[in-house]
Length: 81
Image (cartoon, rainbow, N blue to C red; front, side, top):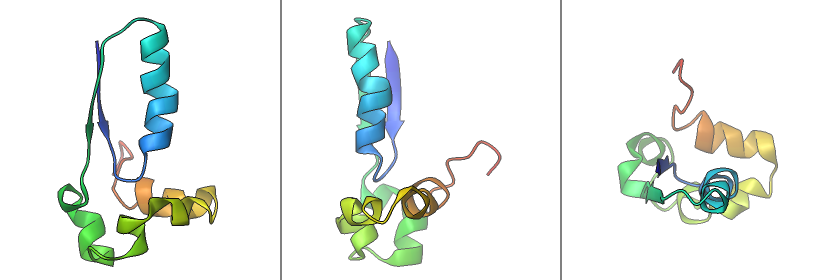
């Protein structure tokens, strides 16, 4: 069984790097998708109506570094953070 907390804005990588392979290995895959209101750090920094919250694809279209700054570093997903 694989249980994953899917950070805000990271649906695609989570599904493609974990959900898909888990299914191919016939593992039970359960996910919990973080909602904007669950991601208080991003809400405080940008506000609930910011495109980073309402339209994550607009950030990904700016490239990897822009998306990483918001959705990885901005949510403190690093184990050292």
